[in-house]
Amino acid sequence: MKTTISIIKADVGSYCGHQLPHPNLLRIAKSELEEAKKAGILIDYYVANCGDDIDLIMTHDKGDANAKVHKVAWDAFVAATAEAKKLKLYGAGQDLLSDAFSGNVKGLGPGSAEMTFEERKSEPVVCFLMDKTDPGAFNLPVYKMFADPFTNAGLVIDPNMHGGFVFEVYDIEEHKRVLLHTPTELYDLLALIGSTSRYVIKRVFPGKGNKVPETEPAACVSTDKLFQIAGEYVGKDDPVAMARGQSGLPSVGELVEPYAFPHLVSGWMRGSHVGPILPCSMKDAIPTRFDGPPRIVALGFQLCEGKLIGPNDIFADIAYDHARSKALKIADYMRRHGPFQPHRLPPGDMEYTSMPKVMEKLKGRFEALK
Ligand code: F6R
Ligand code: MG
Ligand code: MG
Image (tube, rainbow, N blue to C red; front, top):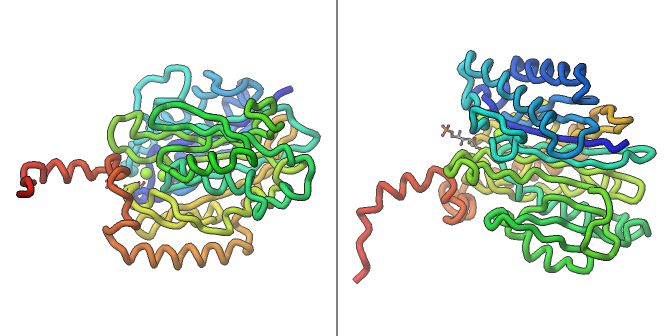
């Protein structure tokens, strides 16, 4: 039997401001998913949150992009939105961009990452949940997990990984994709994914030395960009990802090693600022200072015939204390730049924020240089 793991996420309202979903919303989402489990649509589920995003982690046997499964998530968000409106929560229903569900959450606001595979004898999976940043934030850590021998010791000492990995990269402006094999095309891969606002890693497959993945995916990232759907700044692209570990794939420790370095990501206040990503436990995933700094939570599960055994809240570990304290120092340093680059995003990326409204106001005031 093939198992599918789907993470579908949305921000449908939070308190106070853009911090946390109210416990009532999480309760409602859980009861909707429990009904779907009873109805045989889901095998199992776990309702998590990172900051103001509700992350529905669901397992089933229906494959990627299944209409029934997506409808379960959509209905859970619609029900949570009704409560968010009742409580006048901030941004109630903000990520539901349509009144009607049409078979798939794609293009309707919520983000999704899904993988379907034959469960191995033992199947560890790590779910990564981010808040206050965008899908490009996963480029650096996912690259390190699967292609950097200084992060992933298995690339060097486990012959099962010597076939390398195939990265599926999306060009989110041109709506195209390319498959690149590492290590043979490592420089080409980096040439693209170093531009985090345009090229994003969608999936990673174990490689067989060629570019056509003949294998089942090892990792998947949600790449949904809301401004492209809504045509204007809605900006809540906060992404999720998942990766399988062990036995010829990166170990769980290798999957989470990249986050010992709190790299700089785009997002934070008003989706307009560069700041460090702070690895933390789910209970500490409450963005406060300057609506941030951006957070990442990692939940580790074992799959057992689709059942989710766990989670282990991985970044609760004291081993991430140094990364956290470094992230806080970087946050202080970046904040001192105020509205200046490189704390503020470059002009091209500001196009997708509320900045064009300011520019509109000044439009008639610009004079040609003599
Ligand atoms: C970032 C985010 C917040 C808001 C900010 C302003 O992704 O959600 O930083 O952008 O709090 O929100 P509004 O414009 O709704 O007052
Ligand atoms: Mg919000
Ligand atoms: Mg959010």
